[in-house]
Image (cartoon, rainbow, N blue to C red; front, side):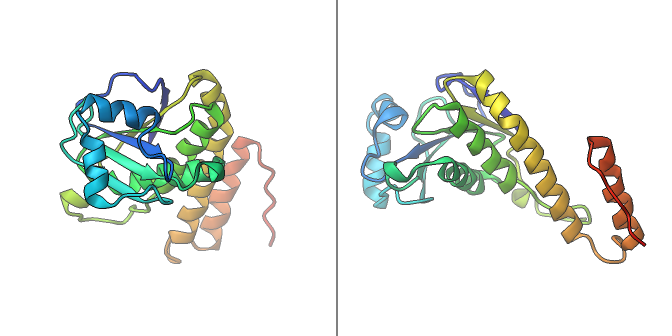
Length: 212
């Protein structure tokens, strides 16, 4: 998964999903309100038709909303006072899960705040949600394959967001490595192979001792 940090108003590609994270009780403020005005009230009508209230991780797919995005999502984050780093992760992960096999290729996540730390945690949420162990998968229907290959997270300071994300990207890599180990069949990940893979982490500065 490629991660980018961009300005909220940056141009979207033709195969992009725009995911707007909104608060319960304040659905059409900020970026969502602006897009609703630009699309002649399309978001408001979709909200009314679906009884979407912005509860935690609730997702409303607004098809044919207009605007630059091929598809628009509203992602509920619950009450504003409860929105923190972990909530940013969950909201972004929920957005990815809703469109990962949509056939579109780019996901743009716009949080209620442009703070760079929240943007970094949202990117972590997508990285973790996009993990899949498919090393031995030989067949899969085309419409089931993940199509989202790039995630853009809107922020007011892309440089600071990249800096904040660097250690989180390393954490995501470590979690993926651990998940791979857990998912491998025992005839592949026998003790010697396990030791070999862990020993290879020494190149990253990790001290490894093999017992036995």
